Length: 284
Image 1: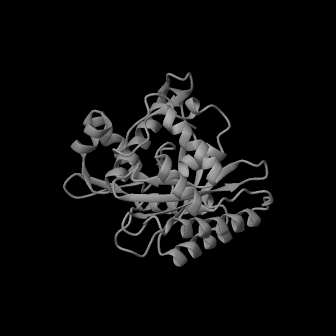
Image 2: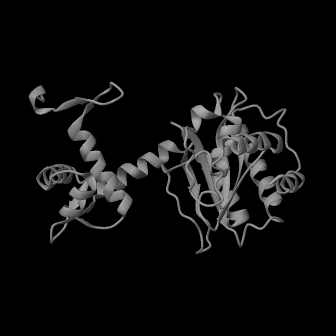
């Protein structure tokens, strides 16, 4: 039994109750995961904005359950239990083994990275992904979140899955991730309308310089797209002439995923991606 006096509780700005020590411990795990390298106690405490004594106590507590591994010299890294939990989370996040095999098949057919994303708390969250065999690729792990306004999958979810006003999903100021990011609300609204007409989203170095991405919606039974299927790769492999072929392949797989999930697939508008890409080029 845990005594209430051993749990420090605070009320955050949203009025929700949170256990301070748990939040701090989670933050330490996030720091170790984000840096992907061994970190000293001094580095961890600085990044977490915690006194070294507090960070050390939390790290040793996490180490008791193998969530953190202490190393000689006073450094720390993620523990084996995190890997086990992560593997279990990946299994749970995936829609189904059959859907994962469909994602893998698209990757094998295109030789490009294929991701399945879901709208979660104002972001596009990666719930399944198969990496391209090419050494030049952009890696993004399952569970990662990307912005809605500057990624192909995010814009698809805004166009087909988000039911509220655009300002609710993308508050001001709109963040510019690269020089190509659409940071004007008027232009972003026009882009979302264009995606609704053409049936797919396109990211031309708007999120990462040198990276292009194309995505299509996966419609649920209510007619909205709660998921999007995306292909991403370097600009050198994602030339304009190849985009329509990728869109067609993604659309075929999106339809197959809808059938696996038991969603209706009738009435999907599917304009010719070659025509819509040319139209987009004229409008830009």
